[in-house]
Length: 294
Image 1 (cartoon, rainbow, N blue to C red):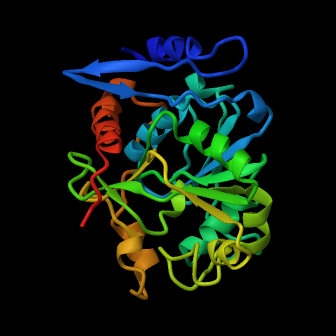
Image 2: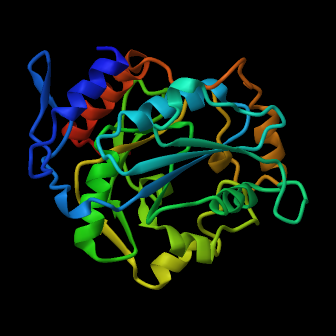
């Protein structure tokens, strides 16, 4: 199925009341449930702002854009916050599709970014909407991720919501297992709360904690954690630099930039959906399987 066909498929998911119809795909003897029948009628008007902070990962960003466009929740935006000297320019096909780019290498005071926390804080200056998702370019989000998060967030009544388990792959997305830790990118949280409490600038890779917004959310008992089917996957073994794997290294931020040198050529466009579909299907199967990683 090409991307246009996939969007036509998504349009058919909604009935007149705003409820997503139960939809299945067959793979062998297994049915892959792409949505869980979430009622989105109560969530209309809630804008979710996804922030993708990036440096030198052009191809990964293209895949993330495709993943974003495939999300079945309609009220969403994607901010691509590029800190590389080479600017990212959107292809015409992304106009009016909720994707925007900010190219910036400095803090508000003109000093260069010195940590990932400063980068994320810089992106937050351009945040818009009601809720926020950390939509990193090396993560995988299943098509129902935002809709499930919004549905459960609204019912929880707290400022943040996350599933108890997410998915983890250590082999570049070939296999997935359940895993449980902070998994910050699995959290849907009030955007103004993140803007108010910000990010730690001490250790790149740990900017959400160490005094950042996630610590504050927990301290105020405003994070609901629910046992529910995962929709987010943390992917290692893909050849990309992982700041979270070297949090205590003093040069973690600069090392990450040195190891990320894919600046692309020409305007940014999404990859075809078929390029990410196999990994999405493997992750969806693992989400149904329910095996917890050791």
